[in-house]
Image 1: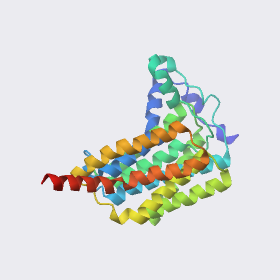
Image 2: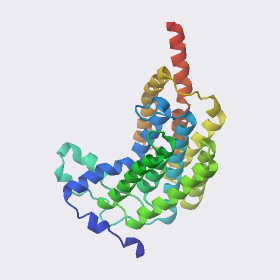
Image 3: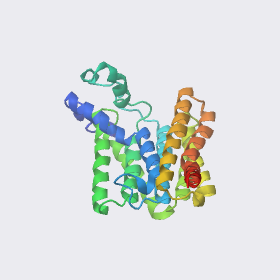
Image 4: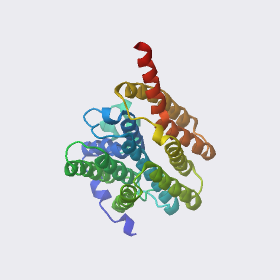
Length: 302
């Protein structure tokens, strides 16, 4: 089978310390990291330390929308094609190199489950890190692209080193994400349209791949983002110094708690869609409350 021809076996035979290092590098393309990074940049905007130059609310909302597109593409294509991962993808090698207390965490980082084509990490990393290179205004455009490209390449390589993907999976993820990124930034251009694209892909995923927690969640993220940005996008103020602090504290308490409870309950696919929509809507709409609360506090103190 052509898909199995590649370098996975060779790279996964690297020294244990190298494999462990790449298990940490791969987190830069994981959903939890990309969600956290996009969410924080959206809340902090121009007040992001050393990175905030030129970060408007629209530009950071676009990052969240790109993440939604990536999630929708990954779950739809994986469910449709149903291609397996390499043998041993569910086993964390070299775990004994780490302290006992870290081995369970390492196992979750260094293994893969579910279908393998295309690579979700490759798809998300190109869309999100490519979006960072577009949204940020630090340094030169060439420099940002070089940094983003290096990180994206390392994430793709990490999936091969830890043995959870074939090379074709990585290349397919990059190709799909590259086309989606070009469409989003070059044609659609606004967060509501990109969220709409994510919703369309997610609906297609439900039809062709069936209803699952993943496809239902992808739909919820896309719909929640689209609804909030269409209804409130023009009313969400640009971040202020005081407002950013209030929004971030509120966000950690509310969105963090919401996600923790949601994942802890293991909801059914039917419940996942509204929960994912509510979580995304909360993330995007929270600055309305944060900025207003900061303004009221400042007025009361004057």
